[in-house]
Image (cartoon, rainbow, N blue to C red; front, top):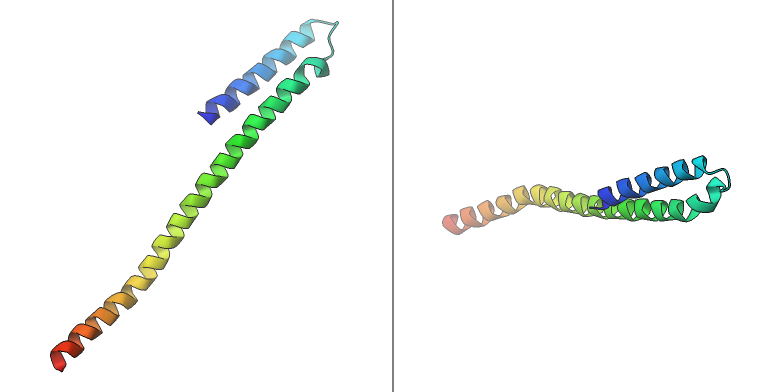
Length: 88
């Protein structure tokens, strides 16, 4: 959804520039600055969301790796406990 918002804001900005270019009375900066700010704000929000999603994914993967590294040790301890229980 944010990707669509970024695309829409870029389209609006491009259309505003095109309209201003056809009217010699207006300066391009007069109309496009607020729209450009809005476009940049949407892009920043999108980037923050993507970074947050990436951070969550990295943390998930890190937890899986730690679990996979610990699993053999847990199995080894379990096997040792079982073996010692049968030997004693």
